[in-house]
Structure formats: structure tokens, C-alpha cells
Image 1 (cartoon, one colour):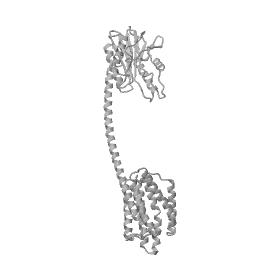
Image 2: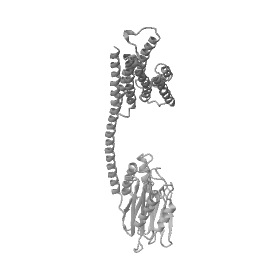
Image 3: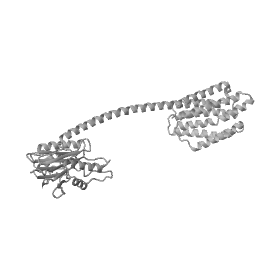
Image 4: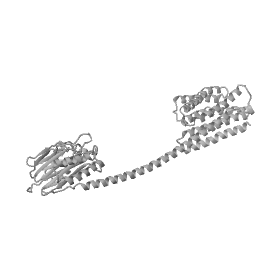
Amino acid sequence: MTLYLQIFFSTLALSFGILHLILYLYNRRTKSNLFFSIFLFLYALNIFFDYQAMLTSADQHLYYLRWHRAVMPYNPIFAVLFFYYAFDFKIPNYFWVLVAGLAITGSLAVMEPMDNFVLVQAPLLLIIGEAIRILIEAIRQRKDDAWIFAAGFILLFLFSLYDLLMDLGLYDAWYGIKNGYPFGFALLIICASIYLARDFARANKTILEQEREAKEMEITQKVLEAEDRRKAKELEEAREVQLSMLPECKSDLGHYEFCFEMHPATEVGGDYYDYETNGDNKITVVIGDATNHGMKAGMMVSIMKSLFLSHINKMNIREFLNHCSRTIRQMKLKNLFMALMLVKIDGDRLEVSSAGIPPLLIYRQETDTVEEIKIKGMPLGAVETFPYETEEVKLNPGDTVLLMTDGLAELFNQDRESFGIDRLKERFMENTEKPVNEIVESLFAAGDEWRGDAKQNDDITLVAFRLNSDRNV
């Protein structure tokens, strides 16, 4: 009977040990399988030497008992290491003190298997107490299936109690079973294996869920990319439509050399510029800046374009500005307004009005100075009517006029410093001998140099024109 029990329990432990070693080799991140397999291999040796000591003669009994004492202290060490990793607990420093205690007392028990075996009991009880603490903490923290380990330990305790009561002489062995703890360990092995199997199933389920989520994210990403491409295409189309509504940089209009240019901050800009002619030497130039930029601002540009083409030659400046402001306000566009400057050119005379646009600059060739014309006015759409002011200016041949939105003057560099109107006037002065298109290009280049790697946060529009000195007005 004893031989059969030895074979059964040793083979059981060895088989499960090989199984969990294979599981570890399959997934090396799960170290709990490694420690459990080592625990089972040691347990198989422990059972073999314990039963072998009972099966052999008296002279060999001590030999196998020494081997039993050499293996037995390390059995619970790897069991507790298994618990730490199974429940994701940090290994405390005092655990290594218990390991040292078991190693030392185990060595003493090898030298005197009978007399010194009692020395192993103290660190052994402490390390069993640590295992119980881990289980209680795992159950308290509601770790998955911690109760399975608790059930295994209760069964081991009951079978070990059987051995203790039998050693105390309170009853004789039942059915010739002199060692009850192997049955308890067998049940603990089964419980631990059930736990690891369920844990393995949970891990596989998590992997499958992660793969499913990854596929869903991939599909979502592809949908978003397709949507982004669609939106980008729509924005590009909207940009092309908007640019088609704006005049190209003109070299000559009547007696004037012109340049119009805009650098939008986004695909669809909120700045607007245009011109309209009405008879010889009569030109109306407009420059505007819708609040914000993007699609809403682009819509305001379209509205302003329609109003400009429909009414600019039918109304004077004040009538036109109030008509536009009233129309925009009636459209109930909420906080969407249009700052605007109008310049009516009749020969060498300009009539200027502004609805919230930066000053107009005039370079006087005769005096080599820059004149600044500031006219205050509410942006269009802010109120239904406003007493917009106008100012008349006479140009001389060679004089150059610069209209602008606030994008360049308010352009920030990496230190959050604005370009400023004074720096803009200085750069304008430095380039007044150049053709107007080169003046505009130099101002944009100065802005890019100032901005550096900082983002352009607003549209920049410049309109420059010069009364040609070689033509009579």
C-alpha cells in the first residue's frame, strides 16, 4: 500500500510539475507557473524520500530521511513565491529572512534528521503563516478565484491535523495510512491547477478582447482617416472656390500698379479683398477680415463678395457700409462680423472709410515719409447703422498705399511677442523703391522670419498700390 501511495503522489506531483513548466515556457511572463512547477518537483522528491524511508531497512532509513530533510524546507518557499506572483503581490524583505531561516535549520536537520527536525518547525510555521496572510489579503482584495487556494489550504490543514493527532497517539492510522499530508497536498495541487487553468483562460480571454479592441480601433482609425481625407478634400475644394472669388495679383489698373495677396491661417481663410472698376480711373478697393477663420469665416467672405459686387457702384461709402452691416445683422450670424476698409479711387484722389480695420499707410515719395490714416468704425454686423466716417486723400505720382488686415501686425513669434505696426511701417519704408508685388513679398518674408517655428494663428492679407509716376492722371 505504501509503495502504491508513493508512486501515485510522486507521479501526480511530477506530472503537474511538467505541465506547469510547459505552460511557463509557452508564456514566460507568467512566472507563477515556473514557481508552481518547481514547488511540485520538490514536492515529488519530498514524497518519494518520505515514503522511501518507510519502505527501506533501518540502515537505509536514515539515508532517505536526510534527503527528505534536505528537500522539505524549500517546498514551502516556492509555494509562497508562487502566491506572490499569482496574486501580483510585492515580495516583502522579511520573506528572505524566513528563507534564510529555513535553509539554515534545514541544513541542521540534514545532519541530525531526528533531533534537529524540530528546529525546522519555527520558520516553517512562520512561512505557512505568510502563505495564510497572502490568501486572506487576496480574498480581502477580491482577487480572482482566491477562494480556490483557500479551499486547498483548508484541505491540507485537515489532513495535516490527521497526522498530528496520530503522532500524539490519539488514534491509530486509518486503513494503514500513516502519512495524511500527501493527500492534502494532492488536493492543494488540484486546487492550484484549477486556479491556474482559470487564470490562463482569463488571460486568453483578455488577449482575445484586446485583439478585438485592436481590430475595432484599426477599423475606427481607417474610418477616421477616410473621414479626414473627405474633409480635407472638401476644405481644399472650399479653398479653391474661395480663391476663385478673389482677384489675382494685378500689375496694372488704370494709372495704378496693384498687388493683392493673402496667406490664410487655415485651408479656408476669413480675410477678403476685392476691387471693382466704374469708368476711367475710378476703382473701388476693399479689404476685410471676418471674425475667426475657417468655414464660418469663409461663409462671411462669400456674403461680403455678393454684397460688394451687387451694391458698391450704386451707393456711396456710408450707404454701402450701413447696408452691409444691416444685412449681416438680419442674417443672425451671432458673433460673426466683418471688419472692412473701403477705398474709392478717382484719378489721384482717394476716399477712405473703415469699419474696424488697421490703419491705411501711404508712402510719400516726395518727403520719404509714411503717413498713417486711422479711421474708427464698428465692424459690419455689430450694429444695424453706424455713422461711418470718411477721409479724402490726394496722391502724388510715386506714392504707394498699403492696406492690411491685422494678421501681420499681430503675428506672434516664439516668445509671444507681436510683430507690431511700427516694425511693419519700418519694413514698408525699407522696400518702397521696389515694385508693389515685391513690397508685399518682402513684408510676408519679414513676417515668416519673425514667426519662426511659431504657428500662424490668423489670416494675413496685404493690398498695395502705387500711382505711377510716368502717367498723367
